[in-house]
Amino acid sequence: MQTEIMSVKLKSQDRDRLKHLAEARKRTPHWLAKEAITQFLEREEAVECFRQESLGAWKEFQRSGESVSNEQVMDWLDSWEAEDEIETPKCK
Image (cartoon, rainbow, N blue to C red; front, top):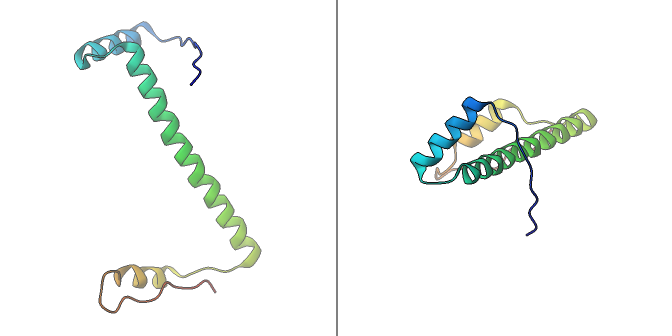
């Protein structure tokens, strides 16, 4: 995997906080910064994926008008793991 150097300007107090935390965790400030960026990207990419799926679902609803009522969904969820679990509600 190719890596590239990137510089990040931090307030001196944030740099000090990073250094102190790195010392406490027996890691380098560099490792903590990379880990923080990786976690941020994973979280934000998941949020963006959910947002795009939601927008797609909204567009499909606007196109088709099909939906499932909240009551039907709640009844279905309440029946999970019951002997008489109801079938997944269908869009109408």
